[in-house]
Length: 262
Length: 356
Image (cartoon, rainbow over all chains, first blue to last red):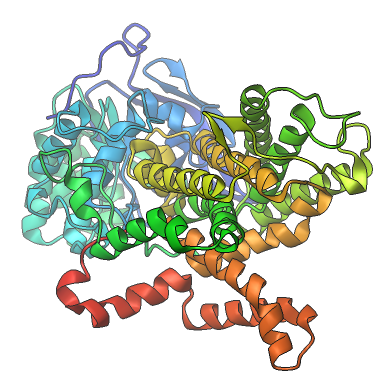
């Protein structure tokens, strides 16, 4: 399903993602302050924190949607701090959006095909692809993986909410991802769809690491091996899921004394 | 832009059927009737109808088509497309032959035309590069500023552009054993050029490049997050659109036989926007419908006004009112009106099929 990336630049045993003192100001407001974070290749990390903790801003800094105000970001050892978003994406970084950012006027197949095209050569091709186009097969594989084969030729604007969330994930897994940022992929999904999501995330190839922002502990703690807690734009605690879950400070601050079910 | 809502027709990059002739079946019977009518028009149409009505409509339609490509698929309202055409027209006059013998270089047409198209395309691409980082009203202002600058430059420069009087005595060349000044020949030349640019735009809109352009229109930030260089993609779209506008400019100078600053003044620049918007920005056929209506109004409103005892000079008022009425009833122009009445005319079953 997900092709293995080849020939991409990796410096030695570098971390997949390395942030050193990253900050982001919005006017006088410090949305992120002095974030230092390392994620190994293939590692699955959860980012937890209340609303306004800076989780999505952290993602926007990593992808370059909002460049950081200070600090350094390395992706597989390469300093990408001043890269444009598309340059980071072409190096194997991917993301999903909290609010689905899809192309409503195009079909499901065209959405995924565009995502495959974006990280391929010939993205300026004026020639229409034939049936045996390799990216066509790749797009169909991804659509199958997120259970959207039945609605392949439908316009995305006509899809149910849960299907749009699935498509959001398919777009992030297209091409040859090396590291994915999932921004609340389970938000608004039904229990069945959440179970599906957990299956999709746990069955990703081992070399693909990710960071997931997720409020639903049943999803988050089942798919990650480490957790970073954020509060007011700073990293507040890091640890294994069970450590974080049982930490009294964390429980008081975020979990409200027990499991948070939304 | 509000004029380009996401009401574009469902298009897919992928062929639906295995055989390569699916596109033939996609042509609506009304489309076939139109093709036959246009091909056989010289058999019964007068020279006036062939050249002054249809020839001119095809040329204006091509320039408006280049705007439709940018605005409809890319969300970029460029007012520089008429200027690109004017630039190509000027280059044909300067590099080729005209009555202004002290300036014109008298190159043969096969050298002058490609170089003229190339220079105009570079001009359009550079204009695009200057404007693609802006959105909405600012794109309009920057492209309008470039168009105005070109107008005043040609007006005041006498060494290259011959100032106010411009160039006259330009005529279509004689090649392939055909004299293209002949009305029927010129009709077929402009028909062929318009049809070719129409088909190419239709094809490219479903190519990876065109799909990605529509993606940048709908959600530029997401396109960047998929690995697309949105700025470069938009500049490439300007380049593509400028080729069409430049070829139309060559035909325009051959059609008019002269070119002067007024050819690409602010009036004609706005006319192209009006033609594209009134025809409809969501489909490539829209600009041609808009151009035909514009030419018909422009040609016959003087006589019509005088027939009812009004001053013929008020024809601009008639054009303005006509277009105001169209846009009041259909924000998507004449194509939008057609799409609304089609289910009632043809029944819901046929309404699904696509008309080119």
